[in-house]
Length: 189
Image (cartoon, rainbow, N blue to C red; front, side, top):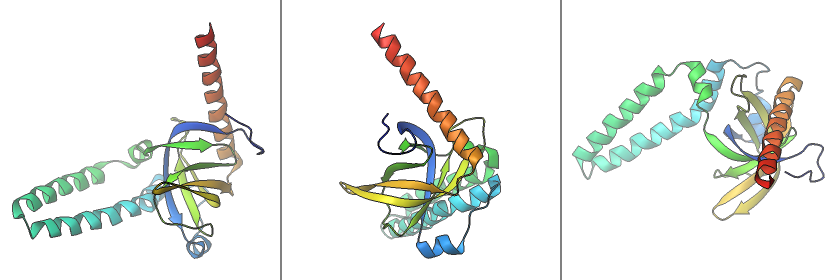
């Protein structure tokens, strides 16, 4: 944990976090809802899953030119995964946000990203710091992009974060700070 010339403490933590990169034009044309329901979250973040599904179908078709048996097995597995996704209820969806290592503060976050982007892009993030609370959906502007091998670490600043969501983040960080202090105390005792 460090204070680093920012108005909030930062914390490295594994956290349920999903994201979506937008161009400046997309961000200008589309505002996030102030109180998103789970069906909006599903549609908005599952769009990436639809693109992935299209890519999988394309690859299965290519495999089918070499081996129809392997292509049939892969198509069946893909159908099974699609069926399972369709049967997940909306509350379960927000409980199943992928875990990601982030450097978090109440003012922003940073994490490793694979997509192509530049500093004029925006990133919408979906975070679930507290298990019994609704997830946080926030738009972020890119502060810095740092190349890390074949990937990039992107530093983001929240824009338009509600006070309620900021309180959730501060509370989560405080809980983690107490856990870390207790752990350090226990190891020195």
